Structure formats: structure tokens, C-alpha cells
Image (cartoon, rainbow, N blue to C red; front, side, top):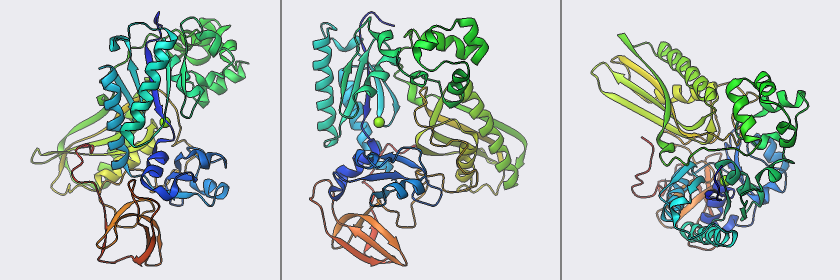
Length: 439
Ligand SMILES: [Mg+2]
């Protein structure tokens, strides 16, 4: 914990849904749900209008539809989220070079090098407001919540206190007072399993936790976890803001004496490696958003393929399923001598458990995963271009018909038209040359 409040956490409000509302003027002020739209889909982000109906992240899309049938249910447009995220990170880096992105819509900023003059509450509040204003300008109107405190933990807690569109500064010396009434799950790394173990021991709040001795905590939740909990319950957190965080990864790979040609064997190996990666992630209290496979062919060509989830996972079946689907894109008929699975885009905050064990374990429809290849169907929300009408987005499709609303962030709400699904005049639209696509 620092003597001054010099760690800032910024979190965009309902990010994916807010980007959709920005780019689809007819949806502004209306309930919007971004996520998997298929039968087993899961909600990734709900707009605040949809949250009023009880729609939440990680809820099944089926339940979300029951609660808010009139919401717009959209699949994700990761090119738009990435581009918007880049603009936000640039605003943050103009404040301080020490920016640690946690995900597309969240980052820590170390304010120590920011030359603020002092770290009084007024100075910090003014800086926070300037930053929020800068983000709004750079993103075409998106709001962000900001927390400032003496550590990552406190900054993160603070940004959540007045969400959405909030700014909270927690001054040095007031941290424990703030934390005490809060539920133990406010502490990073306390997921449902740990919370349950603590609950059975009669520990509900941070204040309860503070009364438990280190020995007892270690007995309850293990050495590594117990030590961390003991410190965090007292707001003791010295973790540095690490600008390179996003590029780190956890991976497992194997080289084979004889070239592998059997696809089911390769799938099996990837599944096992995914299990090892997940285990390592969990051991370090990490989770990650980008799943990558690495494949070396018989001629030593090395290929990698990756896909990015809307929020971090450490769930072995999810990682395995994505790894296997990435393998399916590659021609491995000549034989493979190396296979590997990695997870990057790491976060040490478990925020939304999108892919829990309650989720169906069957194949397919892992919810809003960025499609590794061009979509061949008209997914709701996707960008399209019509030869005469110009740009718009898929409002719905089925029975050989696709309905498009023609509008963009720059237009007002636009007209709706329907076309045969195989119309030669309609094509998916992608921004020209995005360089940020994961490799
Ligand atoms: Mg957010």
C-alpha cells in the first residue's frame, strides 16, 4: 500500500453494449444484450437498460430473453471493441506510461510518473474527471468509471462504487474502514468456492476476515491463498502496475518423435494440454481471454491460431474446446511434430465467471467467441454493406431472409429493409486494415 493515492483503475461502463449503442443509433436508450445468441449462448454484457430487467453477465441467453424479450440480442463485433479499446488505452498512456490493461475495457494506471504536483483529493478528482472526459471524446461518447487509491485492490474497488459514470477517490488511511462492511468476494481471488469455505467458517465480510488469524486462514484455504487473503483483508497490497501484463501468457507444448497424423489423437493431446494450462492459471490465481494453439508441421513450418473471449477464463473444458476448434482450421495432413496450447491476455481479477461448470459441457456455441474465420451466416448485430443502401447491421435473419437496419454512429436511426439471405448486393463489412487482430 502506498502513502499516496496513486493507483487508478478505469473501467468502461457496459462496454460491449455501449459500443453497440454508439454504432447503432436506433438502440440508444434501449435494452441491448451482447453475447451468444444460440441455444446455449451466454450473456457477455447487458446495457444498463437491460439490467433493469434483471439481465446480467454470465446468465444464459435463454433466461435473458425470458426476462427482457424486447431487448436487442446481438453477437459481438470484436473489431469495433478492439478499436475503441485502443483509443481508450492511448488516452490513459498520455497520462502515464505505466498502464496495465486487464481486458479490452479495463486498465490500471500508475499515477506516480504523472506529474500531478500533489496527491490531494481535489487534484486527484480533477485529474480523474479530465481522464473520463478524454475517454468520452476519444470513444465517441462512452462513459467510464474511475477509482483512485493507494493500491490496485483499492483502486479497483473504488471504480465499482459509483458505477456507471462514476469517480471515487479513496484517500490514504480510509481503506480498511471502506472494506470492512463489504462481502469477502470483494477481495480478488475469492471466487464462489473460497467464499463458500469461508461462509461455512462463519466469515462473511472483510471485517469477519480481519479477525481470523493467519494460521487459521491457511488451514481454511491453503498457504498461498491464505497469506494473500490475510494481507488483503487489511488492505495490504503492494502489487505493481505492470505495463507488459497483457502480453504474458501461460502455455504448454509438446514435441513428438514421430509426426502425428491422427486428428483424434491431436485433439486428445490439446485437451490434455488445455487441462495443464488451466491448472497452472488457477494455481497462480490468473485467468486469460486469448486462447492460442501452436502447431509445427513436418516441414518445420510453425503456425499459430488464436481466438479471444469477452472475459477471462481458467476453465479447462472451455480452453480445450476452443483449442480443438482452432486446430480444425489447419491442414495437418502432412503430419505434426509440435502441438501447444496457450492462454494470454491475463487478468488476476476474477470478475465474471462466464464459463462455469454449470454451463453445458457439450461442444459448440461457446457464446460470444470471435469467429476465427469469416462468418458465413448473418448474425444479429454484424456489420454489413449494401451496394445501394450503404452500411448497416443485421437486425435479424431466418427462413432465407435477412433484415438490415441502415445506420451507423454518424447517422440518425436508419431505415429497415429485408433481402433474400443470398442477395448479391449484401456483404459483411469489416473495417479497412485492422492491424490489431490477434495472431
Ligand atoms: Mg467494464
